[in-house]
Length: 252
Image 1 (cartoon, one colour):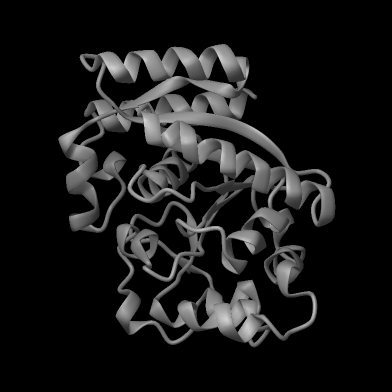
Image 2 (image 1 turned 90 degrees about the horizontal axis):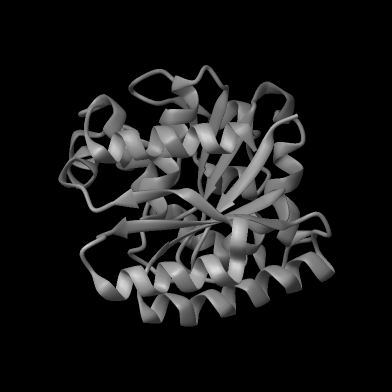
């Protein structure tokens, strides 16, 4: 069965989508079967995989409304290495439409049940908010990966996210756990970043991944080419960091 990871942080701009896309490509490079689910109405992960979100006629929106199965909606990304359940602005409407539907929090979990055996890893790119879409991601997942920048406000938001995970575990998904905290956009020359990193390691111990994702121009450029950084510049520090993260995840 696949390991299902929700990659989430309600704070935007922490490298969540960058992590989802590049980790998917890096895991696929280790010959793992990978499915990426874009659960964010912005559709950035979809675009980062080289799929035109404006041209899509069926997306994760139709899966959540149980109009389509995951097998019908999935596409292969441009590099052909992993599968994608795409998203676009249409997904924003699901927020309202799901409210009155039965088992609204478990729509994604139920859809995944039919195809989990096809994959080694399923990565869910959650939106930067604690809404019904994120709750669907958390209910479907076995564990949560939390990308975060090493700055003061990130620590503030982290405590809220941990409380949300506890609430979901108590009422909807008893097996949910924190897989790990990933330090992103890290600049070792920044004293505050070093201090926050040390605080994280003291408080969360081995829940903090050893791999650190640096600030890297190639990582920032890759989405404009519609490819993961591994296929843009595999020798870059960003590509090497995500390959190291994939190795760490596989060893776990």
